[in-house]
Length: 130
Image (cartoon, rainbow, N blue to C red; front, top):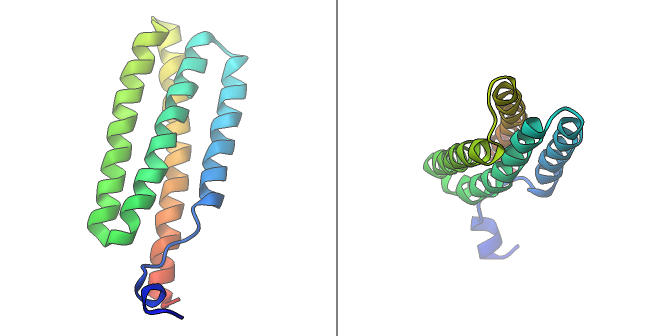
């Protein structure tokens, strides 16, 4: 083992978490496409923001608590911009606005759970000393 490898911070492989997030977003897009245009826009906005949020978290995780916090903040801001931009693009009113918001925040919660699992896996390896 080289010195650089020994001092490198431990973190779980990003690919399984990225694939899980992509699968959730793909399923959300497929289901919302059959519901309404506004729901599809909500799913698309949530998927686009998740595409930014997980990599931001992965970049911050090796830097400890402050890096994880910065990653979550970056993901939050990506979602904040995406929810507003998608809502404006969808031009949803009334029940359509509710469909947009419901779809967006459902996918937000599910992809956020994947991000939390990534952080949990990262901290678990550090605690175990692996």
